[in-house]
Image (cartoon, rainbow, N blue to C red; front, side, top):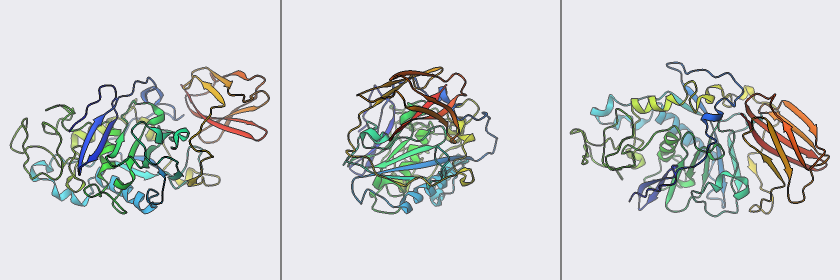
Length: 409
């Protein structure tokens, strides 16, 4: 049964009685990716016609027990599946019915494990963090340190994939381009990721992530989430609703345009993993359009996070031990507005003292651009001379050291 929530628009896939079911959530937030598309501090450019676009991926593994702490091998198997599916290199591509073969596409989008973090330090692209949470829901708690999750890395340079326990009925969900930047990315149920390990039957070939990453790249479901709806893709045939399991070809619905029926083997339907095998040319064009000049994912063209040559310094820890207690986060400062255009306000909270402490602001590559001492617990820092982009603000003094991500518009 399809559940439509009118107030939200994250596309979420769930698994109930061996079926996929999706519902949608929409964020009301003005901090869109489009507004900060130039925050990489690099000159924007357009895509080249046959350019293979590289997307650095960071996996945030949140676990409450050993079973949920999935192996590197399972994670890397998912990365390979993404590359195979998006490049039309999947072995089951031969299962695409002959009438649909001419529509099948290599999207020329590839995924790599991140080799450098936001500060340019070496990383293996997999962050592991023990959490007090036994289960997460679709409220995005897994995306914040304060609620037992892990904060997103810069969403203009990384695809964040959170892997956690979403409960017995949820497979995953994804944000769409333009959703709030601090939650941008994909969430996948830990036993529906990759093709090895202890996986759910019917969802054991990594297609949940393929489906959700395509949502992250702007694709809709084939039926447009309405009865005989529109996914705005010219070469996906209209169908009345979603398909479950593995239908036999041809599978007709009430609005099938011809005898070929539904394209149930498309990655944007709800068929079982083993029965999905293609994106179309129209879907390829729609996803790639996001990387065009002024597009919401254009900044990825300038990301160097896939290249270990650009990393320097000591490697970041792959296992993060949260401070105790992990479920308590009492803010000590308020920093606003963020994103900021000119003056950044810093106010001490809950008895925390800012007076006499040093404020330093760094670029994502670790270059210090501002260093000043505060003389009050309520201060302003003028950032008008900084270029648009992502910066890190550190508050230092005695044994205290705090870091905050700042977006300069």
